[in-house]
Length: 458
Image (cartoon, one colour):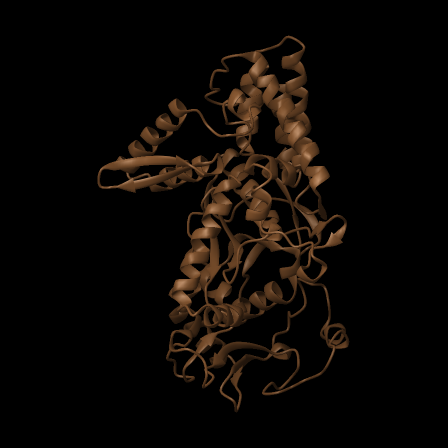
């Protein structure tokens, strides 16, 4: 069975094959860094980390781009509130973001562009849109996209322009020709800090949110590319607007397959600060280890609504301990160099993952293998550990995890540090970054200096 993915654009599951044989190009909308990352971010990050891992396990080379939005109204407001420059604020929050994602076992993407580094590409894209009559500069200085001039608008959300207009709360035009038009370039306001604006032929200002992702994805992946992902809340208007911008400028297809992960609720209610059920990743990690949180989210299909509660997390921790107990029962589990995908349990795991990344089905295979180990087949433990590793699970020493999830033993940590040093020596920096991220996911932070690499438990 070949990989099949549900394409939000066509609203059906389709056979997947990359546009360039052997090479998948994937873009995922990342974080707007004005505050600490929350559980909704964790849901999205882990969903596409799982996709990234399975694509690589399937034998493809993957170029994975996940951006950082480091200029936006909320960022400017928060920097002013804290008396920081925009760069100081975003640097602090990006460091916290990396710590959180590492603790969840998320691999670093191939590229992690910051929006502020791609403003020239954004301006170039705006120039193309204006030359094609799809953009106009309003009297107030903003440059807007003329939605009604793009024939395909609404194809991702499945809504017509009339339906979109009917959904407007208030038809406020301001400097827009049409309420549906959206901003490409925001003219600088007199009271904004100097580091919030860039010079341009449209006057000083900053890019709109939507143009950022169009410019960064196309600059790093070309057009068209294979997969564009993000949370369901980004389907409209963000991703719809990306299509309008990119296809309006190029006149050709932007993305082949669109993927969206389901919403996250807390105790069956939408997460909201006003309801008091809003949790950052750091809040949760004070009570549950990162691997438990990861396993918790992988037990729900990425497109399904996801419900978060302490009770469900406790149940997940118990379930993960069952898997680790099986590995401990088996004793010294040898590393499985290559997974034989024709082996019946491995084939069942693969069939589930190839069915639109059906992680609940794949996790069921892990429990089947654990049951086999407990019934007296310790040889199945190697396959259990290897398949768990495909999902970023079960890589800790069982005794260490079962004693409280405290992380890796010292010998294993030192082995990983040596492997990372060898990867850096071989200039395989992607592998070196992956080792660092996986150690962070298991509570080990590396500190590099001129004297070498040291480590501390976090």
